[in-house]
Length: 249
Image 1 (cartoon, rainbow, N blue to C red):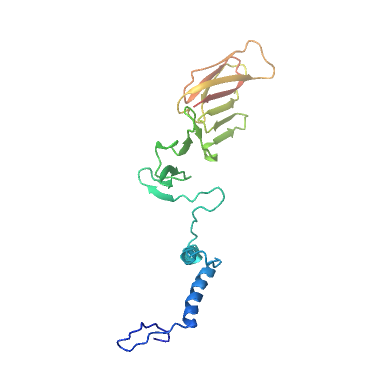
Image 2: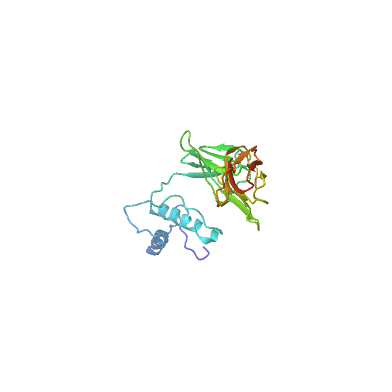
């Protein structure tokens, strides 16, 4: 039929002799089956009656992994130290993060470097996201934080008279500020009202100052006081220049 040899059952009552099985018919079937098995890279064996099934699975998998699908697929397992457990990856709408499960067991979410949805204090297993930073708490009572260059900031300015001001912020929240004030007139008591380069958000923890004079004059005294989160006051009875510093959070 249509150029393809067809088989007919024998029907004695109606005088149909039935189709005689010839070698061409049998060989055609065998050759087609062998072509599928060998195309999959398998070696035909009369002792394994599942080879056609194995070949079909392998060919289908190879086709799915080919460039014809329009993207590079991810292969499950097969690499060193990898199991073949089923991996599920889905979007957690509550946390706004990718949640992953392996072998039916939830193992948490995948941490991303950019997460607009995690913009408030949110616990994610032993991770928590707070004010734009991911923190790690692997041991009870301890806290580590993933930081980048954005966690550091500093600035300084210098005057032509030798004065200067500077600050540096660290990832742990510590802010250190320093400066130098140049006297307008030595011998006249001076009061220097220092305005910190940046206000301390919480508190000043340490502060101090030194007098700047090469001759180390006797009778000249100085003090530091009236500090706030915004600044402090320096007094120098001899009217000398001073260097100051303050540290806090």
